[in-house]
Amino acid sequence: MESFGLFLSIALNYCLIFDLFIMIRYPFSDKSKYMTLYQWGSVIAATIISVVFVVQFRIEETSYSSDWIIQFMFIFQFLVGIYSIYKANVVLNKPGISGSARKLILRRHTTSIVVFFVCNLYIFIFTVYICYKLPLDVTTTPWWQIALKALYFS
Image 1 (cartoon, rainbow, N blue to C red):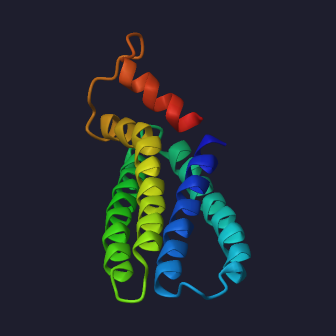
Image 2 (image 1 turned 120 degrees about the vertical axis):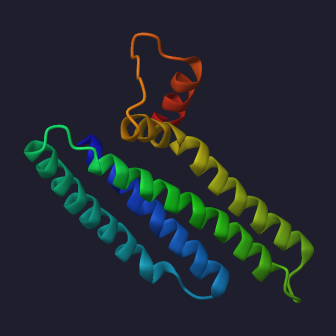
């Protein structure tokens, strides 16, 4: 169940990124028609991926490939988020957009991406520990790990 929640979160974040690109590219189009596709597509994708990972883990009990895939997915989301900030800045600096609207949209867009980064650092750092087989001592948990875990699960 934990893997389903993780992959659903990742799938919905990809939908959010896609929707932000559509909003910036076509600011006045009706995007409500995509909502059902986002929701059902995310649930179906998360179900398929989590079932595949659970089956793979049962076959290979020490499988690290799923952690590598999760790490790649987060790195890709981080890069796409940074690119979307850049692209939004380029698109919104064109003539015809007021300075106050540009500032408001860029601030909200950048804030949502930064919050996503901070909230998902726990999973990213945890997969780095697993993928590179770094020592992970659960008896002496550092303060930053507790803080990141609280942010992620809140």
